[in-house]
Image (cartoon, rainbow, N blue to C red; front, top):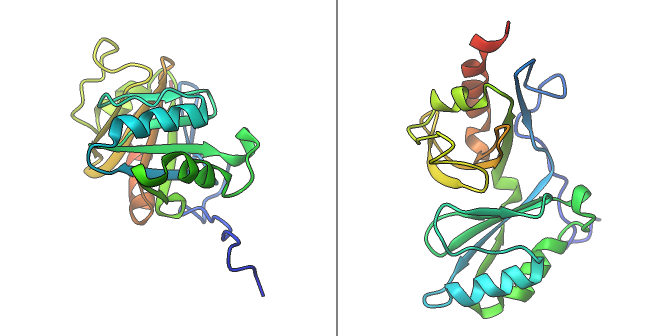
Length: 202
């Protein structure tokens, strides 16, 4: 009988899908970021600034209270996710953390300042990168994606392909991380994949 505290195995919401990448063109790549830990932190009234400091110290990553900001050490993202809220995302393999370690770290850091909830099984993460990534996203969201308006380290909660998503620019390649509810994952991936097709033969 499994340990009641043992975390369940994370299964991709996009299964079955053949191949490592959903799209793999010369100037465009779309992939699922698999087996991520995604933790939602929602602070209690009047505790937002204190919680930001506590999270920043625990992870050694700046936790910004400014809307639309996502900070990262290259392995763990601390992303604004609405008023008084952040989404902290990492791959346990990349960070060397044991399963459940990030959750425990954040619960200890935040304490009575807010609620810390593991949302890993409720999210799907896609990464879109390449020279044509901005054009693909421009077809799917109303955000101004010009580099002067939306660059590395910026994020938004917005409609992407008519579905609610958390949208983060990772670098100026550009590379974008897209987070949606698990129940929308297949429709979302298909919509982004379809928007990529015009660049297939470049």
